[in-house]
Each structure stands twice: as structure tokens, then as C-alpha cells.
Length: 144
Ligand code: ZN
View 1 (tube, rainbow, N blue to C red):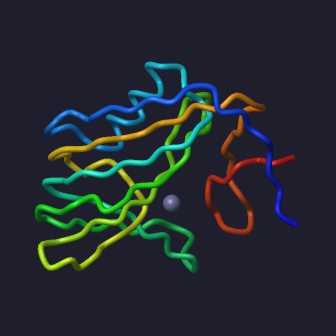
View 2: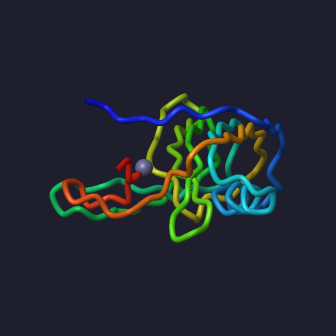
């Protein structure tokens, strides 16, 4: 049975990330500066270069790879919750090249913004806190 908590959307921000900024650090910094500890994130735009993660389920560790070219952000979706007392964004991104080929993965630092328009919606509700999940090795939400 899935577990979930009901949230109430309270604030919505539309903004743009700085040219040359690290995409994940920029969005995470925005949340920290605005007291957003629970929410959802989406974005579109373009990046100069990308670094993404892929979770190896057998080894229970992330593999990282770089795509050193100009790419469109076809979609970025994610959420905001707490880990070690700080807001963290868990987001996945789909990037497209000049032929429309897509790359995708788990967002990590190292993706550099060319241009980016984002929407962050802040929720009110019981905090969601990440802790190590035994079955996956991932820092998932503790729903107990
Ligand atoms: Zn992920």
C-alpha cells in the first residue's frame, strides 16, 4: 500500500536561474533562501553542459556521467524535502540535443545553466525527512 501525506500549496514562485550557474545548486539555494522545505519543482530551458546520475540498483550506488554539449532542458521535475535539517531537491531531468535525441537522469551538481525558467511551489504540511532506506540504499522519505 502506498503511503503519502496530504500537503497544502501555499506559495508559488516563477523565476529564472542565472546564466552560468550550477542548476541544482541554484534551485536548492533559492529554496533555502525562501524557507521552502516542502514543495515541487519544474523547469525548462537549456544547459551548456550536464552531469547526471544513474542509480546502480545492484551495487546500491550512483554512477555519474557527463554530457559535454549544449542541450535543451526538455523537462525537469522534482520535489523539495528535508535531509540533515536542510532543504534538498530530488529532481530528474530530460535533456535534448540538436537532433532531438534525449538524455536523462538524476540531477547532481555539475549541470551549467545557459537559460532556465523554473516554477517552485511551496507546500505546508508535516515535514518529509529523508533517511536511508534499507531495501534500496537510497535516502528516501521516512513515512512512519
Ligand atoms: Zn533520483
